Length: 326
View 1 (cartoon, helix red, strand yellow):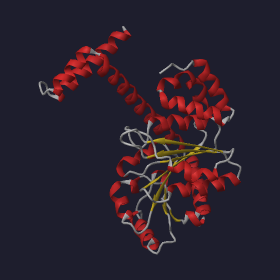
View 2: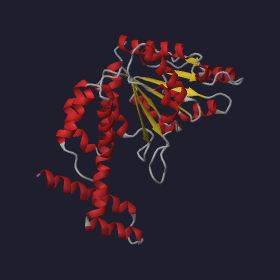
View 3: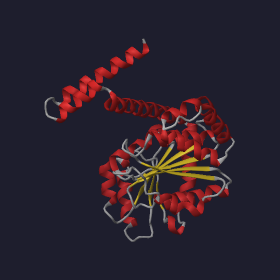
View 4: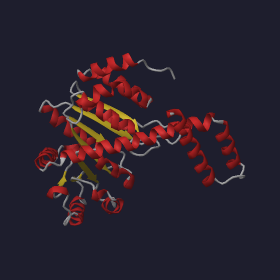
């Protein structure tokens, strides 16, 4: 892959800060291709971040997350707010591509004040590092709200609590979903809970079950997670949900908790990028270093065990890094 010029990246970043959507889209594409493409623009992007209200929307598949987001976006646009949306789609285990279903469903709500990007979950989990860096770009570009919709894959989906200022957990009634949510751990991360598709006859039962599960739960600072009933398709209960989202953000500011949430976001970014860089280095070594290739072949042919070889490869990489610094 041809290396992108630093000046081109800097020019795109400066255009992105002015809110130019085409520049934002190109910049995110280049960041998705390589972590290295963020380095020349870090000094431009980073000082302009931590301003947007980041909302994470998670929950089990089929809960109507995309429709709910679309309705929230429509209300926020009436207030002349700019919204960035990052929709994490399930990725193909073969091609790594995403389904892009969210983009299709939300298309009619996109206007000049809304930017949307779909991206695959990829192998690093339901919240890829590419999504976090895209979030920072949208934040720096001046979007008032950045909404992240996650795949909704159970226990692995709880990472959103270390990224978003406000976490919304959506629940679908009548499909045993409420029990699955209790098991998955998602009941432990939400700031706001939403029983969507509340026009269904089973909705009241689900609402009561969730209310019982949350009865004695109080989050940091004394926030007691509220439960909303919505029917997003019919636009019922969405305005009340938006009012609660704003109330939660004001609560975080009032209790000096917003900074703590952003600290978690920074630490998660560091953790994910360290792992991504190490994985990249490991792949390079596995494909080019003769000694390591020999070890891999010996594992493949059952001459050596993978436990011993993994330690050997790690030490070899550490030695190479040390020599590179000397």
